[in-house]
Amino acid sequence: MKILLDHNVWPVLWIHIKPHGVESVVRMGWERTGDREIVRLAESNGFDVILTLDRNFAEEFRGADFRLRVLILRRIRQNREPLIRAVPDILEMSERMSPGQVEELRIGE
Image 1 (cartoon, rainbow, N blue to C red):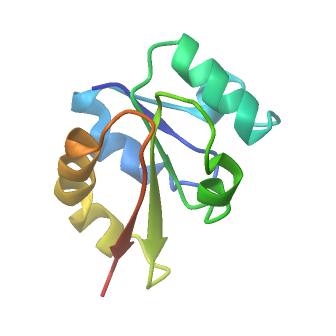
Image 2: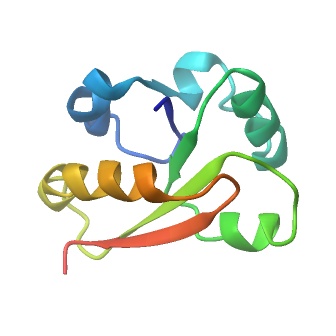
């Protein structure tokens, strides 16, 4: 599974997800690119999942035809520890999502 971190996801996740195949929008040079173009680029570069904090992502892609799985991370607390502890849940949910599916995962409750 190849994972793309959106520009708004804390880079600390990189270290914890790296063994699973991860890249970031910033490292790919797409940080000034709109969401729809990021999805197109991600799909053409073989990514399976994008992790984002952007709650509007779901609305923007409702009814759109795409294969990329979108996992919106809803952080309840603004520190990184709950996010790091949630990595196994993030990976599990990413694996079981269907292509084109948009899901939310609440972190830090």
